[in-house]
Image (tube, rainbow, N blue to C red; front, side, top):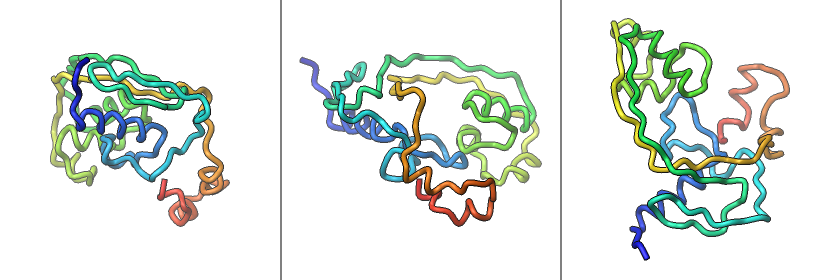
Length: 171
């Protein structure tokens, strides 16, 4: 039987725990930026199965709403683009609308996050790199249903001031 380090097992369990939690789009999507302690969505915790992480450990007693697939290695190359064009491209790849840079964009290009200043100081950007995904953990539940406490925390109307005062930031 293949030995796995406690670090590998810990990262797999940490990744599983991050599924369904919130992320602040202004930050990166790495595990350390997952918000809150619990999931935002309901998962079937009664029907459990073991998840074998490809090339890693098996994590026991995981909701059947969570799946795991082998990752892939992808080369991503872009044209040479202006700041706003590259921001929009990265947002599209992250399934986010608009041109306002996300935390992923800022992390990729080591930018400050003050996007108006970054845009003034940056003429062109390009990407040429490999993205190596060891495995893909994902939620299988469809449709995803928000937990009741999350529904209660979200204001019923789009009011930025009320949203800023709400409990939504804890998620």
